[in-house]
Length: 391
Image 1 (cartoon, helix red, strand yellow):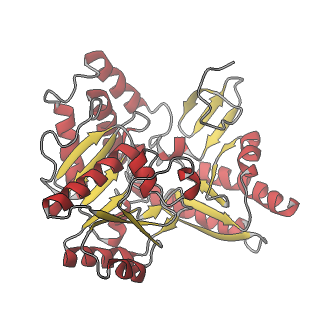
Image 2: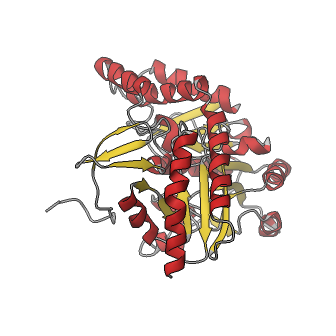
């Protein structure tokens, strides 16, 4: 009997090893991984360059702490600044920590501008983490139940609705920031309209607010751009990253630019493990492989291929509402709860996920091939058809 705390409804499988986009369980059965550890395993499994970089760094030094200079951390911050156009980077260990940093930064920004009780506008159906502050910012009642009282200071509006944001600002002087995901992941793979993001940028500039993008799931190449917001040619003041940044080694980052730069000073925030040499070596290698192997282009091409192939395979099937996404961040929305598909797919040798009750979520590694994409569609489309027909 395991002594693990009962916080996960785990699937009945354990994996011994992986190779590329494939995982193998303890009995040797192989599975096509179309989830990549929930958008984490950017380079798939057992990537030779990543394995080598981690092993070599582990043989030198794993951790020293942020009391000292960490050259790899400086190199990683420079690379992220170059790719994003942002000015400053704070390193942590996870997405919720990166978002927690963003929330603290926004509050301190407000405090420095004379706002005694700062408010951040957040979105319905968003997901920002499970710490008390990020849980409070999240737009999902199910994950909040039992953890009240929630942290105050969040004002919720519908996603992708500029008029709702404008209405929420009427008569208020306490709002300091707007926080959203350019592509809502846990909320069901909803892509913000480019005009909406541009209008939010203009609105924040006019009012002196911080525009904060949670790119924990949609960042680091997943949408076919380095960061999801770049498709709209909009730059935020604050951006959070994690998940795929280290290809499985825990690392998060909160980036700041413009009016958000310089807000944090020594003593305002910190992290014991954040940006340690091992994590930075993994992240630098991840970014290097994405660049050198054109995985941005691959994500765009293969993602489009998957969407087109599913659209063809599921054309006219009653119960299929929409197939949508950006790059290798894909959702197939059905008209009914479909959590049972996860177990059926596992039995058939495919690792998928269902989010927002009715959306089959696909998040393959960025080096997922067209052949693997064809295998995924050929295996999963009949399962979806069968599931819908049996209901």
